[in-house]
Every structure is written in structure tokens, then in C-alpha cells.
Image (tube, rainbow, N blue to C red):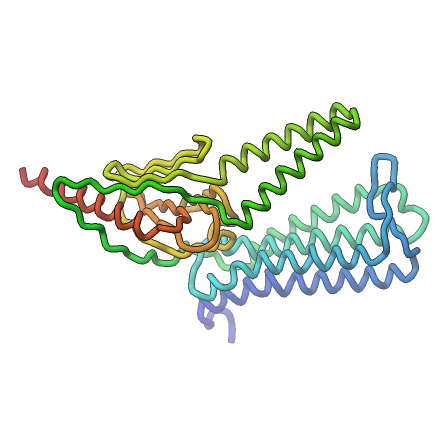
Length: 339
């Protein structure tokens, strides 16, 4: 049966599986096979790093097949796999099309890079450098990524429906408000802290070596990562009669949705990688997200139709408060029209 007679939903999922899982598996398998054949004719210790002056790092021969397996199959499978469940549920978006294409591109990059580095060491000319290997690997990755994207059907955005939440009741003289915080998940927070500590230690070490240029660069990177970590770790949230305000602990970035601009509000379940391509402040077609973890999130749809998504432990309560605010705004508008 041709693709035109198949269920379109099946076709989208099947192409994603082919591109994101099958292609990386075939590329990785072929690359490892080539490496194993070549390694039989090489020394047990191979060059693993090239510097400006030529080879300056060595390692056991098995490093290359292992690197290919991890970078060419395991990591791409995680990327592509994150899109499979949402696609199987019927969700659609450019991001769910991008994940399998990135998986194929990444598998190409690692397979070509590792295999090229092995093949350059067959014969006496390997010490001439591996610039051509890098150029070939990145070029091939770009081409395969583009072909993988084009091979998949285009996807109109279909997102999981937000669960409606009953608005909180309030008396005529009562004002509702919710004030709290949205925090980065513990695992991601620990990884960020570890990265900051590692970079700070590396900066101190480079200063101790009296390498001023390297120390200045490392210090700058450490400061930048620390600032980004501080800006993306905790967000202060306020929902009241004025609308919704979400502000980073350092003051920026800041998001404000006036009450009059709230078209609907609800609660959804978010997978950061599949739905937004990662975590942190994310901007995708049709939505802006403050995605600090996977799980329950508040979804506010603005009058323009654009969605704002915030992962939050007490998302249902915030949605109920904003629902009451929206109802109050709608009631006020009707009273004004009647007058």
C-alpha cells in the first residue's frame, strides 16, 4: 500500500522512526564495522587528539568504537525517542519533526568523525592533520540533517489539550492572589551547580598556571554560566487581579500577561525536550515556555492565540485564580456594555 493510502498519522510516526532511529542505527553499525576492520591493522594505542603541532593525545583503540556507539546511537536515540511518544499520541509540531532530524544529523557527525580519525591513521600520513575529516563530518551532518527534515511530512501544530480548571469563587469584596515560585528540577539544578563549581575550579587552576589568556577566557565563561544558572533556576510567580507575572530571581527575564489578555487557562503535562526542545526559557512557534522540569504546567492562552507555559507544582491553583480573574474581567466587560 502506498503512503498516500495510509493513515497520515501512521506515516508521520513511521517516518520519524525511520529518520530518528533506523538511520542512526545503520550509520553507527556501518561506522563501527569500518573502524574494527581498520583497527586490526593499527597499533593498540591510537591518536585521539590533534593539536596545532600535530598529534598530542593517545588512547586505546577501543575508544573510537565506544565513542561512535555513544555519540552515534545512544544520544541520537534519546533525542528521537523523546518525540516518539508525543507523536504516537497524535501531537504534532515542528519541534517533534526536528528531534528525529537532529538525531540523524548527530549520528552522521559522530560516525563520520570517529571513522575518519581512524582511517587517517592507516598509513604514514595521519600526522598531517584531520582538518579535512572535521570539514567532511560537519558537512555530511548538515546534509543528512536537512534530508532527514525534508523526508518527514510537515506538521501543523497539534498540542495536548489543556485540562480546564474550575475558577475559584470569590465574594464581591474579595481579592484572589497566588504568590509562589517555580523552581528548576533537583537533577538539573545539581547539574548546573556542578558545572559552575567545575568551571570556577578550572578558572582558579588556569590562573595558578599563569596562563593569562586562558584564565581570562575560562573566568569569563564561568561568570556567564553562573549568571545564566542564577537567571534560570528560580522564577517568582504572582497571579492576581492584574494578571500573571513571572520573573526570574535576578529580575530578568520577566513575563507579564495582563488579565485582559487572558483568553483561556488550564493545566497540561509537559515534556521539555519533546515539546520545547529543551529546558529553560524556550520560544517555539505558537508558544513561549519557562520549562524548568518535566511534568505539570500552567498554560495561559493569550488573546492572540499564543500560549505561555510554565512548569509549576501548584499549577491547578494558579489556573483557578486566573480563571476567576478572567471571569471577573468578562463580567466587568458585560456590565460596561449594558451601561
